[in-house]
Length: 386
Image (cartoon, rainbow, N blue to C red; front, side, top):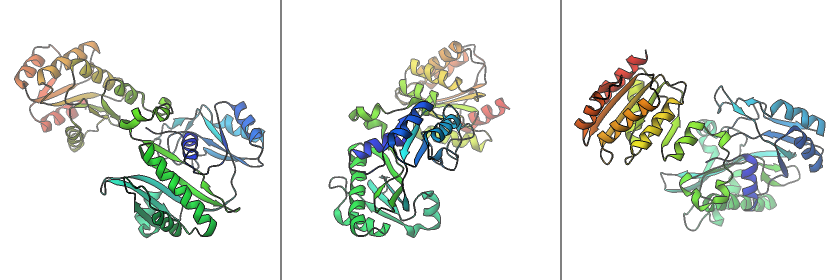
């Protein structure tokens, strides 16, 4: 789960990370009032969407008066903002964050994320901030410092000092930087984050060290331990189909293709998508119904697939183990009849009760095709939608 910049800053401030004063706003008038309430000569109006590249897309604007702030708000609120991370459709801006401006002397990059290779959180720091860290890693890997965080002891003082040295912070700025880094790491670990990023982390001309922007993502499986974080979830920023799938304990991720996939098991789902592409098709989604799905969940999964207007055909690929093939067949039949299926359907079943499952499909009276192998199934669905 991701949250907005202003929400991340509110959380980080509780862990001692210095941030600028700011006010979230939903209307044009609120934006104008926020500028006045901040009482600063320069403020920044920032579009709040779950995507990077807002500045380059025109979603971050400097303003020097309440009227100027309101004018910016009129151009952003209720309108789509297209960045390199949103896709061509963009994201509708529903919230703006009005923040006191900062007199920036230098920008840096700082983040904490999970590194599965070392099975622990890792702090990543670079003296160049406000950049795409992936590009920096590709072209100047030596510019990035990495420090593994002990899962129990946390970040050690010598690591914080080393990170500050890498960032070029000395004296009082090094002390402030170490405090900021420590606060970011504690927030990451205590809130079960998957990512906590400050880009840029800045030094002002007055010598302050603080977070100018912030991004936080959380492990969905740990949200039950953090109700205050779960309440920050903005469903407007998520795909409605993915939100609906979560209600039924289905793992669903929308993609840009036109072949809907329903599979049990994440590995098999990935393999299914790969084979579809090898046969010249494009998957419209990743959908894992799990090993213990019942007839109702299969029906719900079908309904979610068909709610995507891009879907021109559906491939069901199930290996029956705990979930028997006849159960899947019953679910497919019920779903197809309930949703008045009007797109090609190919079903490949294998495993427990496979003969019974195939028999049920053949006797269903539905206009569908069956396949014995994944290759055959992928070839049939690609051909059908053409």
